[in-house]
Image (cartoon, rainbow, N blue to C red):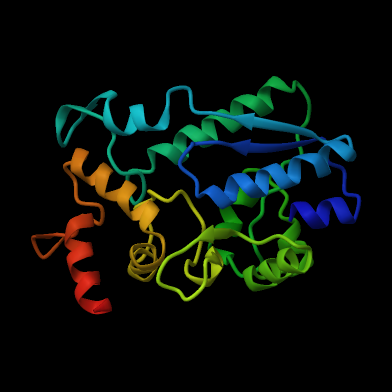
Length: 232
């Protein structure tokens, strides 16, 4: 969306990036590639950060809930407990209010994400990709055609580097528990540097990463046991 907005000279004053600190390295590489492009065009780059470090909120913050009472940390982010998303949206709302002006808010919802249209429209957001009729696959091809790839160092692939869109459906934070089994299997298989981080977090979080199924925990260690058998 951003690349085409710039290419077609749409009005653009600010580009906002919310940095949880938990993104794949390739996201930060893309950010660093985009920033000079924005500077050349006089577009202000704004980086927002959580009010408290993400890992503090995840593991250490004193939390009071109806289900668990008082405990430390929100735990995994995703599913019914998208606390990180709530913080991100609040930070963006606060930034927009600080502008003291009418804000036209571009969001990158693709033309084949119809389930997200209604809420975005109600919030007054503009969806350029929908106007252009660009599906998610069209957007990825457009980025690739313009030299943008989400490259990470991988193992067990016969190559040293790989575009994450070859193994993941979406590139959200590496610790997001919304990831499906295919994505988690590929992280275990090709991205051991991130799987080790997931193991470390699971050691500190009581709730299994994917919750429970028929009373059985589906945490990182249970998934690792399953994946190791499947891959071997």
